[in-house]
Length: 355
Image 1 (cartoon, rainbow, N blue to C red):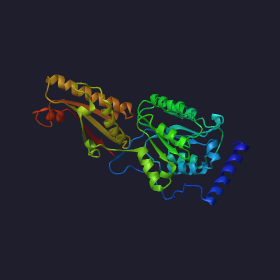
Image 2 (image 1 turned 180 degrees about the vertical axis):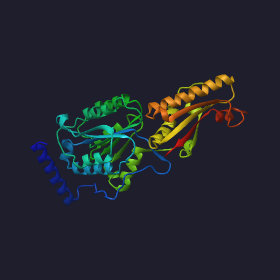
Image 3 (image 1 turned 135 degrees about the horizontal axis):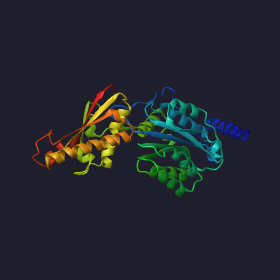
Image 4 (image 1 turned 45 degrees about the horizontal axis):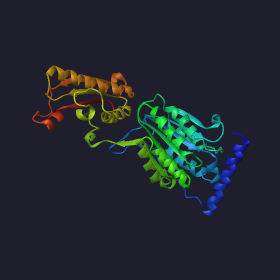
């Protein structure tokens, strides 16, 4: 760290102390007793990768908010779940990118990110947020599953459209959903609008104001929103040895290519298996009795194979996934009408092994 950077950090600290005396700050210190979060009842870990991006540019020093921003990042990394996903953290500033703090995306321990957050430094300069989004978003290139980009910034001094385009481009280069979450640590309307717009670019993000997450309860709510999903009603039996999913949810009629809704349903089971490395599953394909028996047997096998292939693509080892085709031989109910036929067009997931 250069002398000028150390001086800027010290000055920022002095300003923060002065602000505390005058009552200007709105961020309160978070309690130390926060523990790392785990999924609650009906929740599962939904993220496969997460990158944290922290603004350490001049505007965070001008307005004496960097110390508060740092406390929020520390609190966030302190209660991040210690589970099976990849993680990393970058800072950005108006200086050479080689001097930015960078922990690349990798399977790791959130303790490392928390240690990094504890040593974040104010660097200054103008705000290259477009460049920072592209630089950090490149970490997701070639990855699969659900990715999360979490941005702490005041959003100031920015042309908006290039940044929003960068958000869209980063999402397009990732093989799966990429959700952008923003935390506005500043006080300006322009920054609030930009950060909210960033969170809306990929259809699955959210924006928070600093004062919404500066309590243990607010921080926990944010972390749960980012990291955990809730099982749909049709998967309420997800913790049982057997899970049944509707074939109409998984596939179009007479097709064996997984629909987007089908992938989302299977993702729940993928996350379950990632958190239970000793568990195995057999995917059973079933059909109604419309059509020839031999054709239905082949269709049910192709559908089971499609689910198996998708689960492998999401990171589950081949040896942990078996398939079995039943065609129309094991009807759930009699095929008296279309409603009953839909119940028979299904896939069953039979789990076994250690949890």
